Length: 136
Image 1 (cartoon, rainbow, N blue to C red):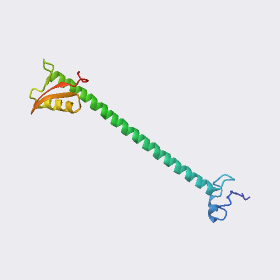
Image 2: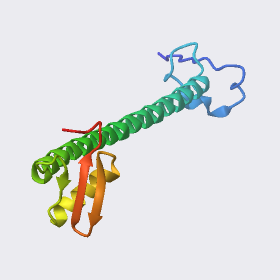
Image 3: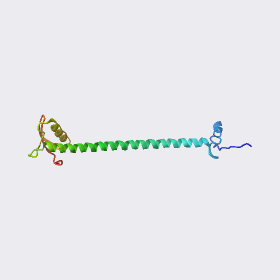
Image 4: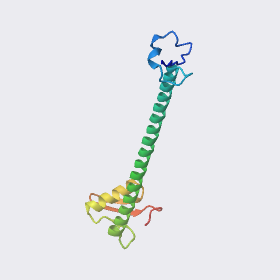
């Protein structure tokens, strides 16, 4: 007993002799060549979606890392304000580095960030006041 397996080949692909290798692979009524072309299109779309998703995730990750770094920098700056306030505050209400280079550098850094106003500066000696909006 012989089994007759027929597959449907669309008019566009009937002239192609290689259709015989797809016999029995595709359901009846589906041209294997058209099905292959359709699957290739779906694969290309899936790759584009994957690339788009990958780019979006990378962008989100970069923004998250930048925001975390910015938040940590702001927190360190706040700690530096507290240290300078505690170590350099005089009875007159002014800040004095007492000629210690670490305090002087900290005061200069805070002045660059707009949190401190330097009144006098001479080497390691820095005298200043808090900017109006900063006073801890």
